[in-house]
Length: 289
Ligand SMILES: [Zn+2]
Image (cartoon, rainbow, N blue to C red):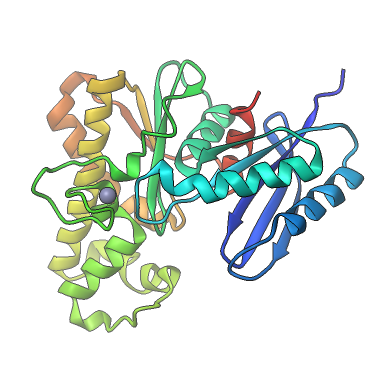
């Protein structure tokens, strides 16, 4: 029997990516440009096009919800309503998963591990999830980006203190770097890629002491968060996805030191994420199977 297809939908202000997914493989991607808000009609039309092209039966629509800088599944209600509307127009069941949990699930499908796996994404927003026994643990509540590593730590945009996001997200690193390193002269909208290429990639030899401190602190935050997950879930492996490989290379030593200090022999394996950019699509689809 042919494996049914699913459509996975990553809706953002200005554009939506629709992926056709078969089991753990993305077989087609279609990008829709639109205004800041998108109407259900536009997305339903996009789904219809994919169904027309797809060699098989489309069985459902998985939505990926991205929250910027905030916890709060309640904030996802407009997205959930939009998705339900698209599903009604397309005549297909819908479900959704936060980005961090979807990415973690996709990562575990791509490269399974014998035991609980945690995945962090240190993107513009930090996010992440835990996969236990082949499923995302409480994905609508647990967001690793806002796991607090220090009660009196840096203030996070979600309102809490000490979140991983406040230390190790791209946004946090850019803002903190600007604060301490005037030579950076970064405009507010500086491209992260440029920042990393020009600054942190020559890190070991060239970066000023303050920047090393910054990277150490960010890595430390990831390591402490990883250690907490060992206690809470018995996590045996922690993977970190960054858009720029140097970001993790720079953060990893401090993260490793932190997990070794806190966990000793129970320290989880720390590694760069294996999955590519599209892993969150396959993860989101897995949630509905
Ligand atoms: Zn937070």
